Image (cartoon, rainbow, N blue to C red; front, side):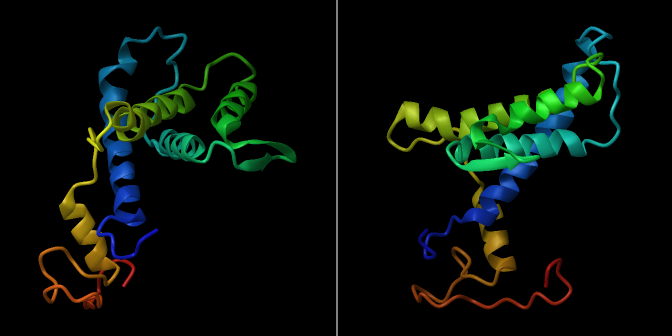
Length: 169
């Protein structure tokens, strides 16, 4: 990756997490109440499993041909979310679908489709879902790199920011 590129992994990951959190909360309260009670008998207050499955789904789509081991069983990363879905179903004794896993996979699929599939289909690099520049600037500032528009005028040296008292500083 090019370190002079203003967009990096940290802002994209932060945006993906924000999209996932907002998407999970919105779909939890807008869509899931309309499911049959036999499918949605589990009510969740904390959405950690949803968000974890969301991240696993996106990672498995972006690294589909990586080899992973799940409890000693080797598989391609593309099948990892579905393996977790089967394990979740088995842990519920086959009585209740793991809606939390399905919910995270659904929101992850929406993100992956909007961020990766649609721009490649449309061509020309037109992004439907892109990381906002304020988040790129914020992450660059927190990491001590040059911030767009606030640098020293074309120099490639990073601008060091005082991050005492900031999370991670």
